[in-house]
Image 1 (cartoon, rainbow, N blue to C red):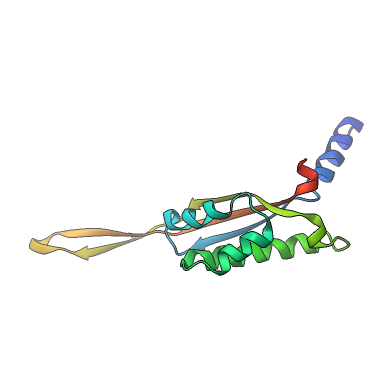
Image 2 (image 1 turned 90 degrees about the vertical axis):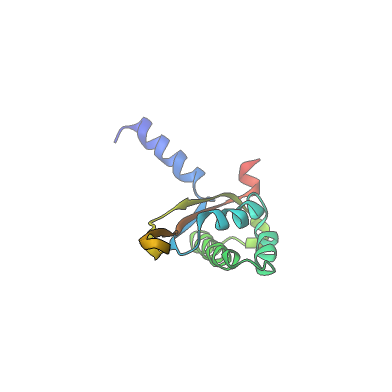
Length: 134
């Protein structure tokens, strides 16, 4: 590898040191319902987001809370020498994509049938540190 590429790779690696992601695939909830909860916590500090998710009555909040705790654990594994409180972690990105759809048939009157679409989704959550973004 050339010197220029090597230096660029090192700079990219250093920039991504504080960025951590976690993914949850095939969650059996409609993406529309999941996005309502994801929009509430986008851009918030980790502590504040955990409080919002813990006291939310929506079922989607339970899955996103699990994912957020997983992302925090990933950050701790990557930065063993750092402290979470001092790092200033926040949710830089969270997005919900639709996944596979189970298609079922519901019998309807006069020999017809209605289609039922049971939707699922993929959630991606990316954490970053405040001091690095400024």
